[in-house]
Image (cartoon, rainbow, N blue to C red; front, top):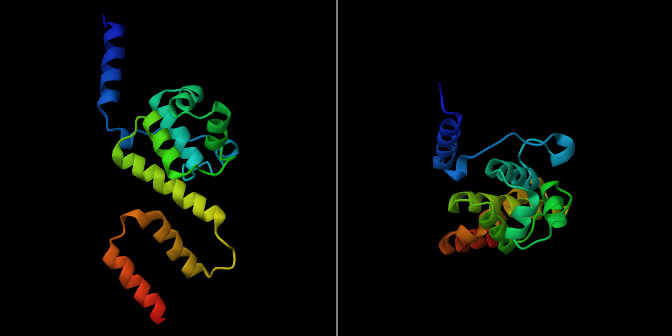
Length: 153
């Protein structure tokens, strides 16, 4: 006969040994997550929190925000927070450095998408989104070259 306690412990050890960056769970339905496909910041928070097996209150407390604010973020009822607060959320969610950057990039992309003007040409808009989401990692030489090319256009 199998010892259920040891099977449970083995399953827990296996789950704990998986890299955090790849931990996933099913998304919330469309009505709860906005897009329902895991592409929104809120849906991603939900995926990460449920993969961790934690409650909204526990994550909110660890990130030093109210549970109401966290719930609004997770349910896409509030804009994603600034980078510093995303870092706090990532720590509360016990994310790897890579996953923290991905979450920060998603928040930046979504914040910028919400804020940008509607009158920008689509091809320019795509460039702005890309620059905004990758801005901190662009090499200074590349930025200078892009500036020169834009000024010459």
